[in-house]
Length: 137
Image (cartoon, rainbow, N blue to C red; front, side, top):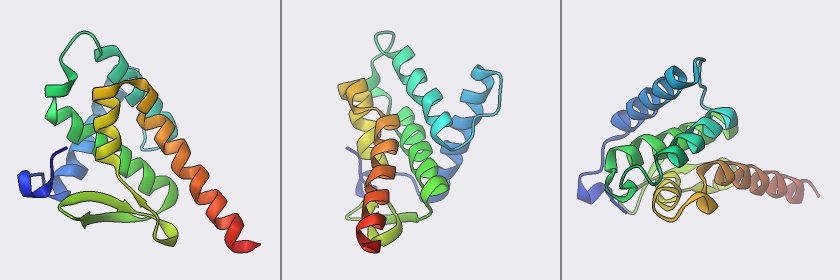
């Protein structure tokens, strides 16, 4: 996994890459693709369509776009903000929960759909919901 010490992009570039990725997905979908679960469904389908047609392990720019898009989707759905953590970009969510969108994007790209960014999005939502319910009880 790349880190900031390995010339990872600044947060402005990550946000721009996520935006451009959403626009590209929207052009392929023929509709606006937002930074939400439905947008991640398109992102998942896009990655899987590339599988077997290209060497995904070598596509660092796709990792930046996909991880940035996942992070922006998490922020849009659950609040939070980007944070540098040990030379990596993470998303700090409510209750101090931390999400690692680039790590998950890398797993999806290199290990397959069982590590999907879409399932990660769902899992983060579930963890946050359980944490809120435990806090309220």
